[in-house]
Amino acid sequence: MSRAVTVHPTARVRGRVRLPGDKSLSHRYALLGALARGTTAISGYASGADCASTLACLRQLGVEIENDREPDGRRTVRVHGPWPRGLTVPAAALDAGNSGSTMRMLAGILAAQSFTTVIDGDASLGRRPMRRVIEPLARMGARIQSHDGRPPLTITGTTSLAPIDHEPDVPSAQVKSAVLLAGLHARGVTRVREPIRTRDHTERALRAFGAAVTADDDWIALEGPQALVPLVLDVPGDISSAAFWMVAAAALPGSDVTIEHVGLNPTRTPVIDVLRRLGARIDVSVAGEHAHEPVGTLRIRHGDLAAVTIAPTEVPAIIDELPVLAALAALGGELSVSGAGELRVKESDRISALAAGLRALGADIDEQPDGFHVRGSRRLSGGRADACGDHRLAMAFSIAALGATAPSTIEDAGAADVSYPEFFGTLDSLRA
Ligand code: S3P
Image (cartoon, rainbow, N blue to C red; front, side, top):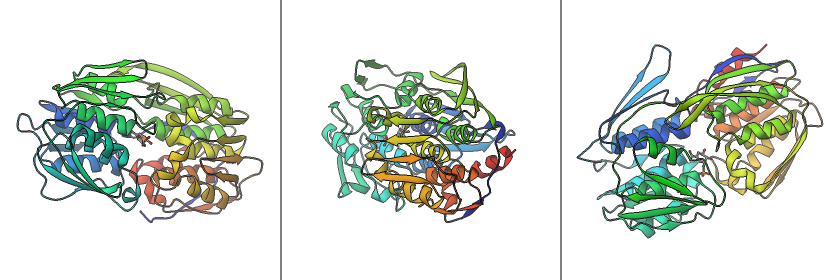
């Protein structure tokens, strides 16, 4: 994790990119596959450490999983749902590593088991807020102990969970998913209210696995208990990983990057709209749908960069891309973001670490309690930026460094392995 990488500037980026499989989808397909009555085959499973943590936790719960590399380099994961036996008591605490998605979503499944499980993670995950899942799951009947609302969690589940209506305090797809996964096992209708919509992969995946889920106005509902059928799945590329190349192409004149087989779920594509507002020229073509998820191709070219203000209601849909959007504004244009306090409880404090890192590369950025303001009024000098163990910061700083006048050192750049182990190889292949 502590590996430092030197990033040299480049005039432009050009070429075609094949992305790692979508991280959000990979977690969900593995978790639902473990609940399904048979074997689920998932090709294009995400290559990063976070999705490996989900597989490791499921194995500890007695799920047999094969993980093979195909001749084209993609991974195929086969999850043998342990039906009718079900999950079994793990011999030791589960290790979710750096992955908040693993801990929060798995908590919804563990709440419905007849045994006690401890789930822990690395130092960064140990600082992240878990009350948002503890409170609704406890209301459903699980007993959950924590370290003052933070990991490790000790979850004593029950096979007689009660359904609830829940409105999360913060818009969060992980919390919504935890409650829906618990609701799958409860007797009756569980509902989650979302005044601001978050990514809906869990709802789409549940339907693909044969469950009935409704979405009316602000409410998402399912009636439990429901059984899941196994599936053959293909995970499209991760648009949050695509965002790094979209920003590089948008920032550097003469760039032209095509990204194939990328997930284009409308709850994830607002980053495209923001990039267009910032000045990027982007062509989108949807080729089809797989498991209710739209998939297609993106082509990105540079345009004159503009000043953009992001409203608080826009933040949840672009939360993971905000660091690299800040990197774009550091290279030209201007970006003002508010209502993004959630960034402070991600893998790092993504407001202060982002501001410190971009400033170290020469950027003009102000930190605010719930956001930031970046002005791309001067050419970045390059410098030494610390990713603070955060994968998205490691990659955002590297993209900013491409447009600097001198080489930069990104400390802790190895953190990119959490979601995108191929990142630095792809970066070098696009230099032109
Ligand atoms: C995710 C939801 C978001 C996002 C995270 C992945 C998911 O987190 O930041 O990277 O797959 O559901 P929150 O639910 O905490 O907003």
